Structures are given as C-alpha cells and as structure tokens.
Length: 349
Image (cartoon, rainbow, N blue to C red):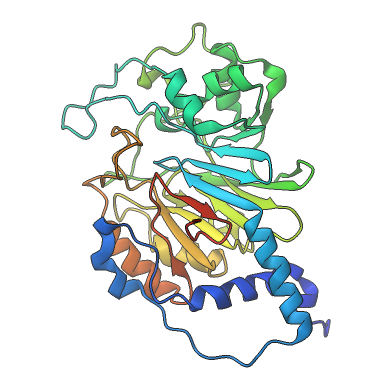
C-alpha cells in the first residue's frame, strides 16, 4: 500500500482542485436568457478559504495561463471548435444545418446531403484535427468538405473511415480508432473512449449499422449515413490542461470513461429516460467535473447566427437540475453559439 497523496499519484488532481475552487466562486452558472429561470436551481455558493501558499499561488497562475491559452466555441449540436494557441481542433463540426423536417413534424429520411462551403469556412479556422463521434448527418455531413479543403486529420470509427473514403477524402488523412487509444499530437493529447448512441423512448435510435467497406457510391441522403458505433473523446491542451470531455450522443460506457476526470465535460442532454440514471452514473464516472456544459439540446436546423433555439423534445431545465443535484460542486455553463469561451468556459471579453 502506497502512502502517496492523491495529488502525488495524479498531478491532474491538483489542477482540478484549483479550477474547482474558481468554479465554486461563481454566484450562478453562465446561462443565456432562455435558461435564466434555471439559474436559481443551479447556482453555487462559495465558502471562504485560507490564503494559498506561495507554491499554490504559482500553481494557480500556471493553471490560469493554461486556461488562457485555450479558447472554445460551441458550433451547435455537439460540435466544438477548440483553439490551443494557434492550433485548432474540431469536434463533430456540423455547420450547414440544412432542413430535414425533423423539428417541423415532417421528417424526411431521403433529405439530400449538402454543404455550404462559405458558411463552413466562416467557423472552422485552419483545423489540424477533426474528431468525429459517429456518422449520423448532424455530426459528419460537413466533415468531407472540411477534410478535403484543409487537409486536416480526421479521427473516427471504421464506419466514418469508409464513408469519408466514399466521399473522396484521402485515406491517409483518416485515423481509425476503437476506444482506449491515447494519441499525442505534440502538445494536444486525445484520449478515445468507446461510447454509445442516445436511446429514444423505444430504446432504439435512428439509422443503426456499421460499414466494413466503402459504399459503392458516395452517400446522397441522410439515410445513407449509419451511426457506425459511437466514440467520446477527451482533449487535453498541453501539460497543464484544461482537459475537455466531448460527447456526441447521450449514452456512454461507464467503464470506458471511468477515471478520465476532465476539467470540462460537454454532456449531451438526453431526449428520453431510456438510459438508466444517466446523469448520476456519468458524473460519478467522470469524477465530478469542474464545469458541466450541456450540448445537443438545440434545434440544429436553425442558423448559427441566431440565438440557440431549444429542441422541444429535450428537457434542458430538468437536466440542469439533475446535474446540480448529482454534482453540486460542478459549475454549469450553458453555451451560446456567438460566444468565445476561455479554457474555464467563462466568456472572453
């Protein structure tokens, strides 16, 4: 039995403790006007603490510097743009947001795929990495254009690989992962976790299936894009963080994410109660993240230039209340499309 402290066993814990202290100092989570009514149920109160030692002050400064070097933009749905100094990582960048009738009661699975190059370029910068959780259209539809126009490396499942090859992406740009990999991109670390897709009220989901070879022709409609297994990713910027857990769907493998302990957890809001004790199991497995950021609760067929409009099937306020109840020390930050956040998920001026 070792007599080392938790911080000695895991230096990440020291940083997370400092970030948690900052999180507890917030009077309320960051909420756009539409969710202001939830603020009272999710606010946290700080407890005065003794003055830090000189070494702790130095650690706090290093942590603040690390946070300052990273910036985040929510791209809607589960998508993110993460900038670490002058390097850009994209996660599930779906920007064209074309109409399928999903939010109008007239969903068409034969909706043709399309990409708006000008709109996509407006939001992506110069990415070197694109992480894809799964291959449904609201996660991958713009990735072929991004990969071909920027040369960015795409990391995803075997199904994602075969679909992108069918779209004409260079196979050498695509890295296939299954979960469990820890990839070092020279100052940006990507941990891959096997994950699961969200469940609807019938305990199922849209367009299941996997591919073992590229389709004979490029996919034409949203029904041509099967889920193809689901991944989650944890991205860590440099040695000092922050670390960001990224989900593309509202289910997960408890054992696969156990012990990740991210600073920020971008958690997909569920549309049903089919997944048993979703919030409590996930937050416990992740070790009580410093900041919880709900995602995939918006109408992703509305333009990013507008304020986020809620998906009516999602109970965002109820989910925020669950998070606060299950992990009261976590700060909740409800994102907005038009805001640039620092590595602590506070808006940058």
